[in-house]
Amino acid sequence: MGLETSSASEKAASQTSSSASLPAWLERGMVEVFPHQPNSSDPNENLAARLSQIDRPLRIKFGIDPTGTEIHLGHSVVYRKLRAFQDAGHTAVLLIGDFTAQIGDPTGKSEVRRQLTAAEVRQNAETYIQQLRPILDFDSPGRLEIRYNSEWLAKLDLAEILGLLSTMTVGQMLAKEGFAERYKKENPIFLHEFLYPLMQGYDSVALKADLELGGTDQKFNLAVGRDLQRHFGQRPQFGLLMPLLPGTDGNQKMSKSLGNYVGLSEDPLTMYSKLEKVADANIHQYFELLTQLPLDQLPDHPRDCQKLLALEVVSQYHSRTAALEAQQAALTLTQGDAKQAEAVPEFSLCAVEFPAKLFFILSATGLCGSSSEARRQIQGGAVRLDGERVDAVDLGFKTAEPLLGKVLQVGKRKFVRLVR
Image 1 (cartoon, rainbow, N blue to C red):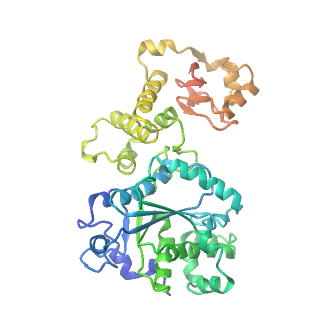
Image 2 (cartoon, rainbow, N blue to C red):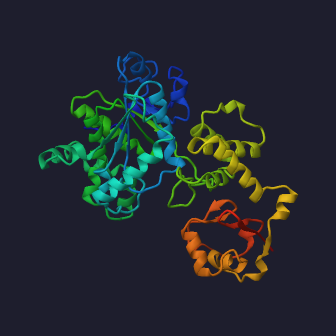
């Protein structure tokens, strides 16, 4: 069986990422749908044809491996598209990869991932579901199906696993970007990792998916699902790819490990403070992928765009009132008028010898009685720098420059502005 990502005909067909025949709600933010032959009336080649010809709701699959506990805005891009399908009358199939998470998706990884226990995965899954409630429709009958792939994967016997392995060659597996890079660098690739894309593909067979959503880094895995559905005599699913959201640093993709993320469960002020600093080059993409606002009606001034974006996104995950309060708090702390600025006590960093840890600076300013208290306050989430919560207990600064003009805060009422 030939993997579809290596098919010349499909590559040619997918060069155009959207078609006028697709509805606007589907096209917004989309990078690619495959296969994509907009002039065909075949519902296996043209998603618009399948949408118009099928007499039942489509089953829209999106799989997540709960390898952590926090979802960020980068993850939300695909969930928002899943919600768009729900609103259009289709069934969102939220697949919890409780079995595959114990292997870990090797996509984009330069080394083998730590294998999680079943208990860890289940606990993580519960936190994921709670964070998704502001995005997905959990209430309308028939609009959401939550499944766990241990339902079928845990029941596969050796003969069935060997059957899956026989559908792909080692050469095809090594064509997967992450594997190819690791093989070239002679980094270890363990045999169990080869099973991951096959098991994710088998999920599409078990769920009888009509379409699977994923980020642009997931095309290989989605194509495996199409191949396996054909192998098992099913109508193959479409793949729909969404872009990877840039992080708040403006360069790399949003990632918790890189520290450039905005978490869905973060408090309103933290979310607002991060979003109002999104780089001008990325602001249009943030609006496109994280809101429903008309892109041709955005403010002309970049600063107004930043504030509107922050207000809109915080409102989605908290409330409009909470978002407005966060906006006012951010204004008071970082961009207040002269009277507000005067109301914030100042602390001269000349009194600190650099390099210095933030917990020492907190003690030196008097915001905390000691360095040990400062560490406890950071661990408890009570410390903010320019409105952004500080999570790293050992955060340090080589010089005073990155801190100048910023407001250091402990709790709701204790803060100072750091000056030279």
